Amino acid sequence: MAMMMTNTSRPSATIVAGVREALRAASRGFHFHVNSNQGSFKDGPLCNKRKSIVPFKCPIRHIPVAYSNSAASVTLKDQCRPSIQLLREKKIVPDSDPPSSKDMNLLYEFFDRSGKVMVLTGAGISTESGIPDYRSPNGAYSTGFKPITHQEFVRSSRSRRRYWARSYAGWRRFTAAQPSAAHYALASLEKLGRVNLMVTQNVDRLHHRAGSNPLELHGTVYTVICLNCSTSISRELFQEQVKALNPKWASAIESLGGGPPGSDKSFGMQQRPDGDIEINEKFWEEDFYIPNCQQCGGMLKPDVVFFGDNVLKDRADKAMEAARGCDAFLVLGSSLMTMSAYRLVSAAHEANAPIAIINIGETRADDLVSLKISARCGEILPRLLEMGSIAVPSLS
Image (tube, rainbow, N blue to C red; front, top):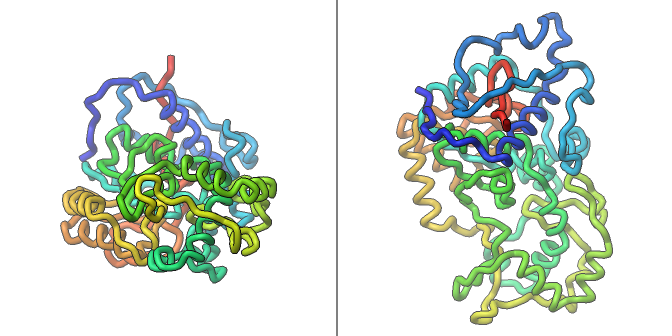
């Protein structure tokens, strides 16, 4: 049975704007459906008398969306965000057919039957923001890229210099990425009581910028920690410390320019999933200095779980408790190849919770699911906010 909100306060302007943007982005992805002989979308199977799964407790106004064979009929306000078409051309977003009416109905029913829905998101939800993933057909692994391991980072000063130089160089471009329609749709579902807990494998904080408050299973690149005394500092402060230690180097890196997420203009090289950019050894092999902890002089590391590292116990325990107690489990954009993610799905399955996966390509848990949809998260989640007609809270 669907959860109902008891809070009658009006959603914030940020969330309202996010809902609008998500829905408009989704409508652009579906514009070509009505050119078949099935008639208008208004008469289609998704337009019925059932209730919305998003129980807005504030004035509602319905906004008709013109569906045509011209993508120009709907435009996004944020022109700085990379378009899905550009990302497809750059092969950052994997190819996939748009979700069918059957897919939409099944996903609706999955939510409608569930109270406490737990959501796990992976790299696939951020590819639509221009951040590459590792395991898709065009992901980082397909080019032979090998991410740094925890052991390499700790044991090799050369590996640390390479990591931090590349990460510094890619930071401006990485942080320029904007939340996608999927991020905004999830934030809206979360704020409106349709998501009980969101856990993300991503370290990019795009969920936060869209208005969510997820449990960051693998940490975040926005925080830097000391491996000796556990002191933490902001990534922006660390960037300033790197610049202060290497002023000429930093100036040279910044003068190389940068392109928007989804392009390959920055240094003529490809951005990696964790935000670093591959740059020539001459930029970091010599005369590049890494800041130490200002409290104890210890080694600084991004607050992320590198390959070969372990998820912090408190994070893992909280996620596992939620997985064992949820009514339903939804996976978005993850192949579940990391054990820290797969074990959550397995725990929910053992607790007899239905499991749905929206992901392009196979996952490690395909044999555990009751629903599997191969689609882009940004083309299916926003439509879940209102099946049939588009409704957003009124600002007046």
